[in-house]
Length: 378
Ligand SMILES: Cc1cc2nc3c(=O)[nH]c(=O)nc-3n(C[C@H](O)[C@H](O)[C@H](O)COP(=O)(O)OP(=O)(O)OC[C@H]3O[C@@H](n4cnc5c(N)ncnc54)[C@H](O)[C@@H]3O)c2cc1C
Figure 1: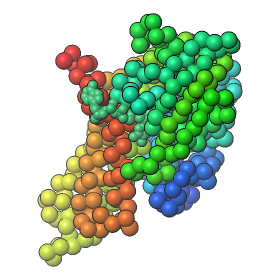
Figure 2 (figure 1 turned 60 degrees about the vertical axis):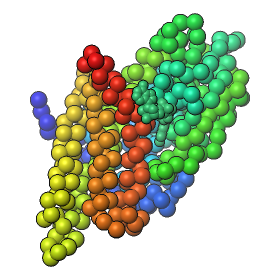
Figure 3 (figure 1 turned 120 degrees about the vertical axis):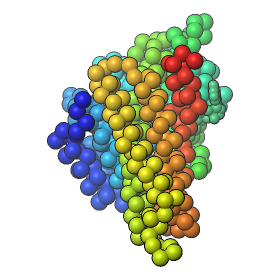
Figure 4 (figure 1 turned 180 degrees about the horizontal axis):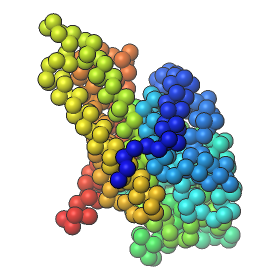
């Protein structure tokens, strides 16, 4: 076991931290709306290109390096909505790169890595969130391909997306595992409507909305993988997602930990720094433990994926652990900051609002517990 980052990973991490601090300084609350300018800067920095082969304009980095980079991005960029949007872009690309035909890769990956087109993945429906494979959106065989009908909800980047990976039932006669497929739908296709962004509790710059498909014709060559392979693709992509998003969250957790340490040392009460009160320092000790333990598990999952092995159990553990740790860390940070923590000026209230979503998207905490208990055989 080697726990040290190599020279390249260290260089990438440091350059992303420098970049985000210098270039992405606009507060997320001020930006409000999709941050197109910051998005373009992230693309120029090649954040969206990291794990993709050089022949499509990618950097050819392994998944662990992508995870380390994402962690640095989550650490230095205070706009968690932007970080999440970039992660979604990368995750869509990984699905196309791993399952798509050569033609699809050439058609979409170059514009994905350059950030010229914004990508989204659409699985959730109003009636099926946790029960993702219980989806009703239907892709019926039609001349030259499929006719898509249904509505997706909460879709990240949905309102601004140029390209959407849509999961739909292609064969209702077989089991859910083999009756779902993934299709690429492009903005402007007939019968495809992108609804306005939904108002949210946090992640202000992230655009989430409904996507409606009404007799939307999708050519057969837009299938990602083969017909009926959707559930396999979904399961694999969840393993990447439950590692990449927690990487960003762990970066955020590290920033909040440092902010809390600095505040607790600088703020005095009863004639001494509040860090000297055990009720305060214990909260910070828990943050440090979450940071160290989360990092070990995160890098283990990323390394396992680089070895092309399954990591469904480990990815669920890391997703559950880090998202809950982030939420607790944010809550504790507000408490440590006292009245100032509740005021927008100190920014920790925004981190708290952003953090709640981490325990919901990509499978709720309860669903991760279900997965883990299934692996234990309970
Ligand atoms: C910010 C954000 C971004 C998102 N981005 C996307 C996206 O890009 N693409 C996409 O497809 N979806 C996206 N989603 C949707 C997200 O994946 C779902 O919201 C999530 O899976 C939960 O589904 P639901 O909202 O229908 O809740 P429900 O499934 O209705 O769950 C409600 C509650 O019941 C609990 N519950 C349900 N079933 C069980 C069970 N079997 N055991 C125990 N508890 C259970 C849940 O844990 C939860 O607490 C996003 C959501 C958010 C908030």
